[in-house]
Length: 494
Image 1 (tube, rainbow, N blue to C red):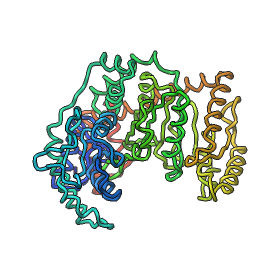
Image 2: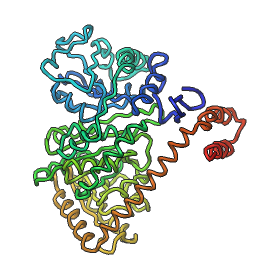
Image 3: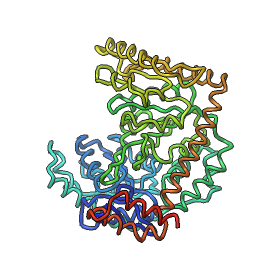
Image 4: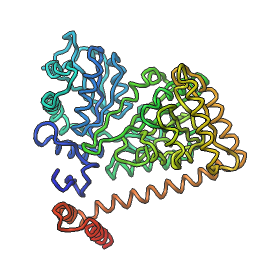
């Protein structure tokens, strides 16, 4: 990494936000993370597991936050999870490592790399990382002083550094992936999504071939996009809603997208912690993914991930977006039904009236309509209903509706599912659902074209030679950004 905001790649240059981690930790550790990304096509991903539930939530989140600052993608396991379930969760997440929080009862011997809690558990495709309890003693403090975090980062980097350099990459044949998907194998499903998320051209080519082969077995699932501002209760809603669908005989896949840091590129994905009850049900597959800097609240390969979930036999696929407000529009071009969750009494009524995310909604649900908030939720429902009345309906056969619900009590969830079913029936009868899917296929094509052009730009040999130089010129004020961009684009055309 350097002051031009670029990070050296093996055959091309990547923007820093798309490449390695920060400089937190020992000198050179950020470059190790960058090198890992270049070799594996994605960031090192780790599941943080407190098997004994012996640590405070602040302690676990403190470790996770530190790892994200170091450039890792971090999954949080529910506290008290068993060793067997932790391994299974890590494999389905596509994690490279499991960071095992030290046992508070002294049942482990980190010095010898042993953890007796994993005795009898088959650990494959993921490495265990143990750290001595002393590394966490300061996390019991309520405040996180910079020196404490720096000391923890050093300990974590020392534990991960040797593993980052020697972790092998495991890739199967297209035939194994296709047969595994069509057989409903969850591990294969996870591995294919991992391939889709990789930046390596050889991984992308293999994943695209797999998607091409399974396409005849897709297209029948109901795709639901769920968006809303942070704090609206998306995860709680999805857990309660998906459980109700499973009770009704459905198999549900949940693709949850979490934001990536614009500084380190790392992310913290706590979806399975927030959906701890749902993730243990065999009829449900939950895959958290980092946004990786993609706009629109989704990850770059969300469309393909939905497709492989359909091929694996899930008849309802739910996409939970990042939740950043008015820019959450990309998911609407990928799903059959787009549900926007809103809050009452939090200033969202005014934001909701603005065009953007609201005009793309097939339904709006005012969440947390329970207790003392019930009356405010009903008032908000009327406000949103009036706002939607001012917008041109997106379909001839369907006018967006506004509902109230409570993810806490389950009130209104049956009505939301009935609304989704009525929407599908109406659009099928009018032929608009088919037209929508055809339009989405074209949008998918254009997104792939834009992505391909971007990758070819960074791989162009002449551009690669001049990229750092031009970035340095801009940083030093000797060249205008517009001038530099035009020069680089001109080089890419040659």
